[in-house]
Length: 488
Image 1 (cartoon, rainbow, N blue to C red):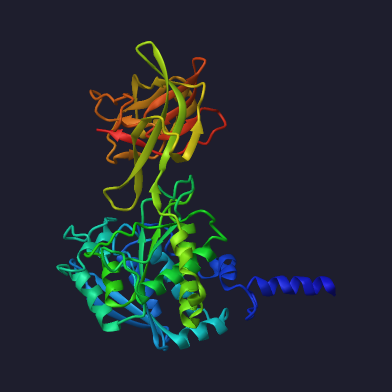
Image 2 (cartoon, rainbow, N blue to C red):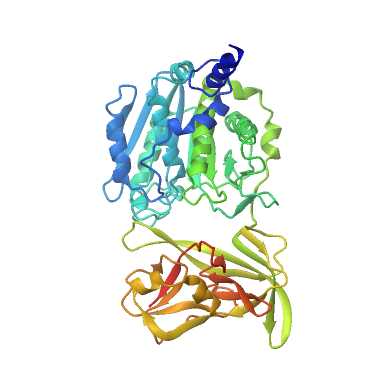
């Protein structure tokens, strides 16, 4: 009987049967999959994908759904609301079309409120004390082509004053009509930021935007500062050392700074980088938890007890991360052997059909990189750089390349193959480079800006290859990763 009671207590704690006496955020962390919107898994989802989901929400009587405006190309910008309380909360996402993490999290939150079984007491409390407004995907035209800017090539977050774009006009019009108590400005940031001078990526960065160049703190901004302090404490249980503060320079053209100045306590949330999370699904989960936690705290006013000193203690973003750092490699130059580190970064490029992203690498720095870190960070002391080669004995069809042993290719010192037929894409989905134009050579120079394609040897034997920035340990048992490029 005691064993049965223990099992029941575990079930109760994990949220299958809900009680008032549990840690809300901890429970959300472990029950997140119950609410995740599984139709949004890839960062390249389009406006049409969320329209389908919003159409379903219209059938749910707890949501009010309206079209707030339209984009340059005529796509609807939606405003959804829920709740009946006096405190107003406004959340908007994807002002930049290539920053979709929080948009995914908002649809998880819609699923949370749509659920009729779990967390009912908390939901009743939230919805009776607050009215929550959501504007997902402010920039649907940018999302369509995975571009930061809108169809006019204007950065919407620099159009808060002139209001020349229909998207900015819509956002400002909704803001002015709501006069919300709290606002959440939801973005993605460079994944190469660290939390201060550390090796830890800035998974989430916060900011209570300033209201002037002097960075004055009035009561409106103070509320944002206190709430961020509380969220920092909560998130530090799950990603300790991975939370930072965004630059607090005043930007009068930005919406966050403008809304703060106009009287809405505004919080910037930036989703950064996390190891082995290319689609930002873990960071999406953190957004889900922190936003629901913030909404709950606003509904009960519990954040007011937090010291503003916590916000001040959060480290600023620092750009200390490379995608790849190869350390202590020996470079043989004109008979002189020198030791160097090589920093490599990837650029994400959208395919012509706008359905996939591929990575194209470049050498960002060479020399002493001891004050920097890498998502892939490998000490190669005792190994030597060597030039890679193109295999020129024959040309290969696509089918033939896919049947080749990459280990044999690498062991021969080759990273590039000649193509027999046309490759329409700009990349190849195996870690080998393909040359369409046989008169072209792929540069193997070790210089800043060059594509990183080279060999790494020890005692004359190829131990590693670097192909388009992807480091491969050469072995018969190795699963090779990454993509090559197509040289036209």
